[in-house]
Image (cartoon, rainbow over all chains, first blue to last red; front, side, top):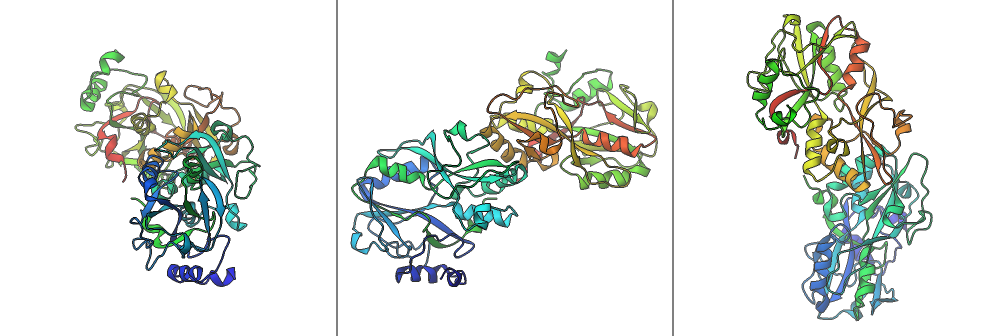
Length: 265
Length: 265
């Protein structure tokens, strides 16, 4: 199935397949060149604080778009994009705890819900690959490892928590190029937040990530860390909203936007 | 005297003082905001090859300007800028060996000489400082250490040699910012060429530089390496031109150009 999906380059067609019930564990490498995003759906009572949290922690939670209250459509992000059905799989949170992972959320939708879409590292990874940088986890069709750091995010209302970072091992020349390339993509996490010393940001053991696939650091490689779109999960756990719905990690919202359109001068 | 000089912000006035015989060991921090440059003066028979060498190794030898053959004036770089007199001190090379360090070169000037001015790290250091990055060697009024690497430059005609790099120790956050800032200044060495592993570029002992002032690496700091304007000295030694005149290291040409004018978008 994955091989067939890879031939579908139209993001709308992929969303229609997900709407029809198709499940995939990861949307990485699907609809190449298109922006994929993290999704966070919250009751309107939490929306202003969550938006403030995103703006205060823009490297971890870069806002690509939000819906009107009660409106499940995201016209700015894709044609006929219905956030209730067009992702492969969702994660439902109740009082800050995971309560289920359904394939659509039509039965959970309410008139007071607001959907946020946040930038995701798939976009800058595409830019890195196109910039000639080889990413070992791509070669292996894996996800990069991510880690909870000792760095506090800036709280907003009930939202708070530690910064989560993803890590990619790079030789110094590629690390320098990666800073240059990802700096041009501020809406999909932008430049690295750290490189070189995991312990300086509270990471004790690179071999034991909090998620994603572990990847070894080879001699001559630096660990390079980017703010990660998993950061909002910590904030949701802290805020404990009665209801929250996100994408299931790895299975992102595929938008019609082109990654290139996110590049700054 | 240095305290008085620091009050003279007009680059033309400084050049007039040097023309009148004022000697300073270093022009660092003089005429803040103005571009300073490395100078290489060669017989016209070597000029085309040297220019090709600079273009092939633009990170180490970024060309800011050159004079017409036999013309000692550099109008594009400064008002009434006479390259024979307006630097604090020169270094004369004969057959690739240092033959003297006079304060002016009027008696050496010939109708077949061509002057090249190359960008220098003082410009990007100014940009780093203004970007909020503290440079320990600035606080100490020292020069950064530089090292001969194992990396070959691209030869052109008789010019060849190893890449020389300068090193500044930076914490990771500042190293990332420094890549972002210096990438915007390609005509004054641009982005770092390496960071993290000195031995990977043939540097055995950071405490023993080939020039400049040694600086210790503190815990949590990365050594960050930029291509250095001392690189042409190696190339001159290799090419062994019968006559070559450079600035004396540290005592640069002070131009009328503003550093900001070198910043790319």
